[in-house]
Image 1 (tube, rainbow, N blue to C red):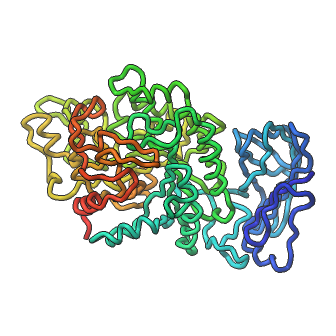
Image 2: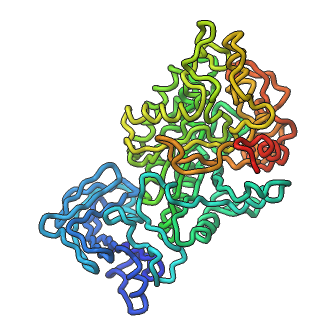
Image 3: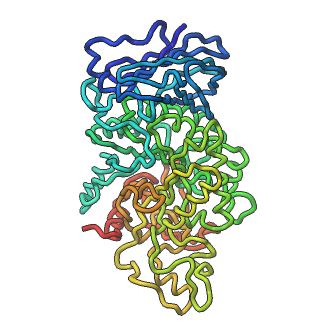
Length: 572
């Protein structure tokens, strides 16, 4: 039986698992194909259960070429074993077919064919996306015809997806923000869309699901480029050191995570309809950092985190997500890297980078599946402390010895993110990776914002008097009192930083102040109780949380108003 993948949007049907040749081009579809930069017809000519023969035909509708390279990725364990009429290389699931010396010329409207044999076990799924010299094929590029609804955009993978692009404004969050007094000042800002349980893929409580958000992004996109920001967040045994963000899956439910959460997300994101969007995925916040800081014999260790370290399901889950989503050409994976007040200490910094490399090379993933990392997701660490540096001393005592810094190497997110990027590259991540910093709630403006350094009476008066971050302890993370909106989302703001983002939508609670029964898998965490006196993870300090908070992810009007009042830069 012959199977073929032509996947031309609107003009050609997506053909899979049928007999016979690829879909024929009819006169009515000619205009659409002219608007498509290239098409790839991938056909399984013979499949004998453990191996297969494939024939590939590439048609170039762009400028003539003197050389070419076609790339795709497999969803399974297919391996190319021999080939003809092209030179094929494979790294993990990623395949590149380059021209031979005799067939490098590819005219406008011209086609070239090549073939290969491969092996596999399990399911021999057809690739869903192809590129020719970095340009996504089988997708209307917006130059006319075709009836496609994805607008313009090159569909070409870029170094920084935020560069030259608009970012999706979630209409559901925007409506809530605009309904608040003064909220219209920021309701047009882009925020992350959180996929924090299986039901969120289809939409919960009558809200928008993933496809609805992607369709809305296409409508916002117009003729330019558009980034859509997704938070992929449902690991088994999720967030093992906290209760407010515990998820729906138990520690051993890795197969359910793969088949009922990641696979359906990947299927939707791979739909050619969305190929012109730049889809940024923030992968599993708070997961891997917990394996470094909250395991073993440390005072901060928890039984849940030790379980997740032992069973390996955080590493497996993250690796699987990176591999499946990274195989889609217009998806950009950013792996969560905690924040400076979590991983900035010497005994956390390098081990974290090493663990991230382990996860990024597991379950079929490679470092090529990682576009970058994100720090400070849904947290409050100041972007830049201007009133003191880590190298300062007071009366001969280093700032590192202050109670606030407590021997950390970093005092703010920007310095940490830039240094951690260098560390990540040193352990084998690509030199082109970029960092994102969540600035949704780290402005710390308002009347409590220091105007200059603290008194030099002692190292503590110096640091505490000058620091913008007004938390009681850097380990406090839930609905922090006094916090404000930070820098507005922007692309390329500093060296090594792809963007400042509002990945956590301002106004959405971190967790409830008291126990609230629910069917969302969300427990009560004392760190969200303003009367809680703390534990080893926050130096046995008060929690600093706001009162009367709802469940995590639910709208918290009082917090939203505080964030606007304390915004820095201030709101006009």
